[in-house]
Image (cartoon, rainbow, N blue to C red; front, side):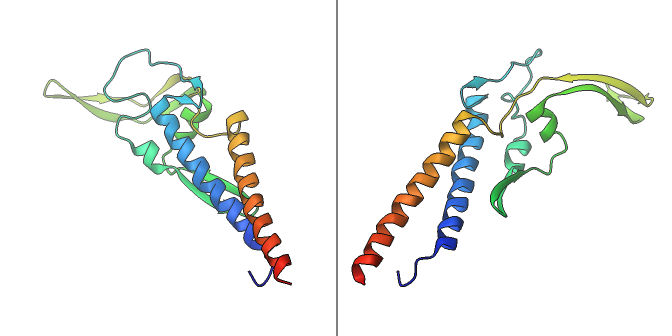
Length: 153
């Protein structure tokens, strides 16, 4: 280490946070919980696991270092509704439905929705612990490099 690079330390911390948090948030789908807080079960048993029918939501989550933090995004429109819960009404467009070999027309209408929060991404005590551990590990490594650098002088 010819030069003490604090910018590299920051980049390392943010990248490690991105990797560690993305891994833990992905595991929330296996745990069917936000770390230890279990998700509310479905009212009707359907195919697939809770929040994993096709896996599209889980696969859509991307983590990216942005500025001084890590941003998590998803391109599926229902990600926020599941993560934060949803209560209200939504407009259903007119469409056709096929049942028993017959096609039925469905008129446009409003549908009331109450979707419980099933958080898989967010801040909380476990998230803060992961962030603290990443910072501590990177500072220990930086301290070792700094000590070696000083000894070389």
